[in-house]
Amino acid sequence: MTLQILLPPAPIATVAESPAAPIQPQIRAGYSPIEMAALPGWEQDATFAALPALRRSCRHFLRAPSDTVIGEGVVARSAAAWHTVCAALDTVADEESLRAVLMSAFVVYGVSANSNGEQNNRGVFTGYYEADLKGSLTRGGSYQTPIYGPPRDLVTVNLKDFASNADAPLSAAPASLVGRVIQQERGGLLKPYYTRAEIDAAGAIATAADVIVWAEDPVDVHILHIQGSGRVTLPDGHVIRIGFAGHNGLSFRGIGGILLKAEVLKPGQASMILVRDWLKAHPKQATEYMNLNARYIFFRRLDPSQTEGGPIGAFGVSLTPMRSLAVDPRFVTLGVPIWLDTYDPDGVPLQRLMSAQDVGSAIKGAVRGDFFWGSGSEAFSMAGRMKSDGQYFIFVPK
Image 1 (cartoon, rainbow, N blue to C red):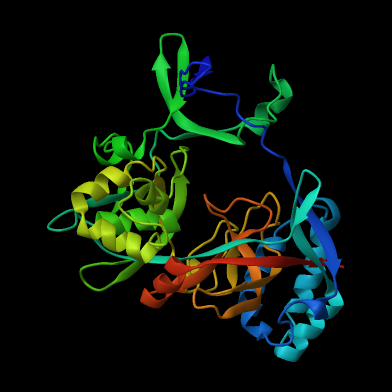
Image 2: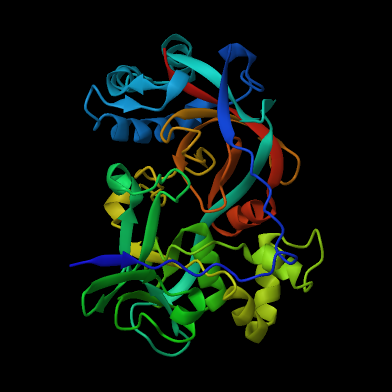
């Protein structure tokens, strides 16, 4: 079968309307060694609270063959090196012994963004949480908003698999394409997947995807799509967890930015708390604005035995509240211990040992992080208000 790939058409504009786009600077990460004792707040953190997160990352590292290379450049290490430090972490019994292992087994590098010869080790740190929703396994009453599993016609193409056979370089292309195949007389055509509006308003995937749970509030579902994981309380009080299982491949637009551009919120009012309150107070307009974010997330029901009290992150391990960080994996190797130096929404310093265990659509850049606050109303309050300047440092085996 011949498969053609059809991309969305480029917008048509005159030369006067469309000046040449500026060349975007190529950003690389820089890694500078630093003494562990010089880390900001090193003496104050209760590092032992991070041990569960570190050990969960180790479970993933231990599955890699010894000769696998983890990371790139100066921070690249063999899986065998990680196996050694993970064995040492497995012997830790208290704060003192953990600090001893960290000092003896790891080296630390500060991370910076290198663009056009300039280095910047500061970046933006936001927060996220595990969303809470009310839902039902069957449709009825107030439970009318579907949370879908991955559609059966969803296709993901990893372009790296085709790089060696491509007629033109793929260096400027995305890493993958997501779409659906339309059967034609002489083969198939890969088209972009349905938008949020087509899925929610037109029911485009009603027969192509299973509904894993029916939710009570569409605004809560939209927030769930942004957060990537959630807890759903069923009518009988039972709680199930759902987690990220895929997306439609279209661009993400933050709902806060959408409402600011529409001027229904003023600058400084785009915290997730105020955004949620506005959307729930204006349900008809909320649908229109939420549909401007074309990105759509699909979910799966999580096995309680695998979540260990927290949702599953992109690294494949259960996240630890206030000790797991979402990063851009192009610059920070998933699973590595990471020292964070920023502050919470109330101005309290967050200088602590964490683990890089998740990613996010909006988490892009060499120095960019998303702090996992956990679940519940307090976690929502902290995550929804957090947007702080900061820096981080990564640990790798000596």
